[in-house]
Every structure is written in C-alpha cells, then in structure tokens.
Amino acid sequence: MSDTIVKEETASAASTIQEKDDHIDTMVSLPKDTATVYINPRPVVQGFWKSRLAIHPGFEGDPRETLSRRRKAVILAVIAQAGCLGGFSSTIYFPSLVQITKDLNASTTTINSSVSLFILFMGISPLLTSTLSDHFKFRRVLYLVFTTIFCLASLGGGFSKSAGPLIAARVFQAIGSGGASILGAGTVADIYVPTEQGTSMGLMFLGQFLGPVLGPPIGGLLAEAFGWQATFFFMAIVSAIVIVELFFLLPETYRHEPVDPLSAIEAKGGDPEPKKRFNPFQAVFLLRHPVVFLASLETGMIFALMFSIETIAPVLFGKFYNLSESQTGFTYIAAGFGSVVGAVIGGRLSDMSLMKAKAKNGGELVLEDRLSLNMWIAGFFTVPLGSLLFGWGAEKHLHIAVAIAGFGIYNFGMSQVLSAGAAYLVNAIPGQGSSATAAGNFLRMILACVISLLAQIIVDHIGYGYYGVILAALNIICMGLFYLVKINGAKMRADATRKEQ
Image 1 (cartoon, helix red, strand yellow):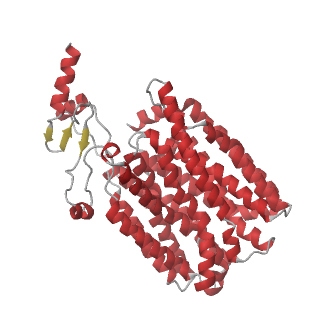
Image 2 (spheres, rainbow, N blue to C red; image 1 turned 135 degrees about the horizontal axis):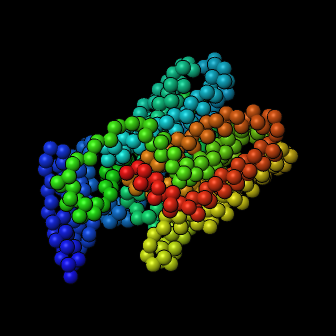
Image 3 (cartoon, one colour; image 1 turned 45 degrees about the horizontal axis):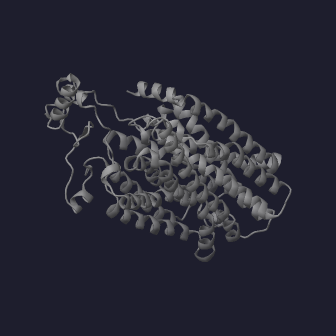
C-alpha cells in the first residue's frame, strides 16, 4: 500500500516540477500513465519556418512514439542520401585519376595522396560532429552545416587549376561528408525502437555502401564525356539537392534519455552537475572500452579490406582485362548489388533475432541478441569466400566474372556484419550513441587509409591470390575477437557505462 502511495505521489510531483535556479531552467514532464520523465532542456520552437531556422528547435516527447511510420521513412530516406555523399565522392573520380594527373601536371603520388587524405579526414571529421551533437544535444543543424561545407568544397574542386587546391578541396569534402555519415546512426536510434533499428540501420547504411561502388561507373562516364571536373560539379549538384531536403524534411530528432522521477525530484535540491569540457577528440577515448574497441575493430577491418579491393581493382581490370575507364567502373555494380541485398536481409534478420530473443526472455531485451547467426555466417564464411574468389580469380587470370562475383559476395557478407555491428554499437553506451559510432568510424577510416595505401604494394610482391588469403585470414581473426562481445558483451557494457558516468 505504501509503495502505491509513493508511486502516485512521485508521478504527481514529477508531472508538475518546474525547476528554476542559477544553473537549471528545466521542465520535467511526465507522460500520462507512465513512469517516464523526459527532460527538455529548451522549449520547443513552434511554427514551420521558425523551427526550420532555429539552431536548436528541440523535440517534444519521444520521437520513437510521436513520429508516424511514414514520417520516419522520409527521415530515413533523407539521412541515407546525406550519408551517401562521402562514399560517392571517395571513389567517383577514381577512373579519372590519370586524366587529373596529366591536366594538372602533377605526379601520381601527389594526386593519389588526395585519396588517402580524403579517407583520413573522413575518420577525423565525425569526431567533431559527434562530440558537438552529444555536447549540445542537437543533430539537424550539423547535417545542414557540414553538407554545405561539402557542397562548397565540391565546387572548389571543379575549379581547381593545380594539385594544391584540388587536395584542399578533397580534404574539405571529407570534412563535410563526415557530418551526415556519423549522425545517421544517432538519428536512427532517436526515431526507432531497438527491435527496429537493425533493419533501419541497414537501409541507412545503403547509401554508404552504394556510394563507393556506384561512384566509379558514374565518374567514368562523366570523365569521358565532360572531363574530370564534371565529377566535382556533379557532387555539388547532388549535395545541393540534399541540403534542400534536409532543410524542409528533417526535424530535430535528438532524443533525451528518460529520467527516473524520484531522481528528478531529488535533483532539485542537489548541487548542479559539473559542465563537461568540450573536447572534439573525446569520442576516440571510448575505444579504451573493450566493448567499443572489439566491435569497432571487426566492422572497421571488414570495411577497410573492402576499400582496398576497390583501390586495386582499376589496375587489375585495366592491366589484365584491358577494360576502359568506364568499363572498369561498371565492374563495381555487382559489389553494389551485394551490398544492397546484404544490408536489407542482414538488418531484418538482426531485428527478428532480437525480437525472438526478447520474447524468449520474458520481455527482457538483451542487446547481444542483435548479433544474430546470419552475421556470424557472413563474417566467418561468406566474406572469406568472396576474398578468395576475388584473389585467386585475378591471380590465375580466370574469367573476369570470377573476380567480379568474388567482390559481390564479399560485400554481401560485409553489409550484414556492418548493419548488425552498427546497430549494436550505437546502443552500447547509453547517451553516447553518436560518440561510440564516431569512435568506430575513426578506427574504420584509419584502417582503410593505411590498408588502401599498402594494398597495391602487397599485391605487387605476393600477387592477388595470397592477398585474398590475407583478407580472409584477417576477417576470421577479427570476427573471432568480435565473438567475445557476444559472450561477455553485457558485462563489458555495464563496465563501460559505469566508467563514463
């Protein structure tokens, strides 16, 4: 009886608390018939134009419950398009590298450095965006600002007359694309419940998967028809369209974590929490937690090795199969198809596994159940198979379809691992979704930068066949380490959460 009275008094008090003192200006509101308190640090900006022009418009309630399925689908489509910009621009000018080198009278090493620097800054930029997002509790304005930087940098690249401005444009393209590529995971976690995040994360990642594989064929056609500058102007036009979509179709979705009513009441008389210092590299330190590092290592390695295949493929298909620039670009379509199918299937199976396990556990949701059987099959068998097919098909100069199919199979397995891994990582540490994702992205891009630089050197020394063996072995080793998360993830997450509080 006393427990009932306490709960009723708590709910009544929590629904009307208005805290106003020197350090707090917060309304604590309790949704009807629930024991959840949502703290909105700022009043929600009303009106269409005012909310679109506000830096911090806020969101009333829980977007997972408030937004309709149709509205969520629109948001998901917009952030997927924004997320594809980095992937597209990373490879769209691959087919025209030789043309750029000649036109700008630069060395091959100098122009190739723009590729490595692009990948490096794609890893660094999300550290800033994720920290800004988690520190100031917003996402929408960051999408707009960083996509605008990308658009302006693309225009600058198209007008470049020497290697220096071109490399600078590529660096700022990478910085601009790093915003949407990392904020997307946080947005998915904002608007979808955990049992829907696998499918949604897979669809959101489609843009990032498709960009690198569709970039070369589009870039090859544009370079042959209009010159390499057209690839930059194309990305400027695409990003301008995305900016318009972000402005009109994307609301602020940052979801504040629910607060226990008793804690909210007691906090009124307590001391204010010390303000956290803004540190753009704060997210990197999350890699010290085993749960973040092990999940990031496998998702990073599997992506980096895929990117290394993309890097060596133009030389392979041009030298041994005598394909033109545009023909080489079209060989990436199979990899794109594998990514699409794998992302859709993998995300759906991950959600189904989580829901099935939740029902079996009496309604209790265990995050490690998201790491479903299909992901382990993909990582331990599908990806190594694709690596070996690509490597030995190229080494033995078999029909070109063997290497192309191997790349497609690799991406089919990779996208299943990435979808489940990303959905797991964004929820691993409460309140640190964007930062944990940025930490994983940072490691992924560092690995991609280093391995893509070494890939052709390794192939020149040991051949494509044994390089395929190395890819398969590295994936198996990293998947084995990732399995430690499946076994001990709950304890690892609890330790990480305690240390971050």
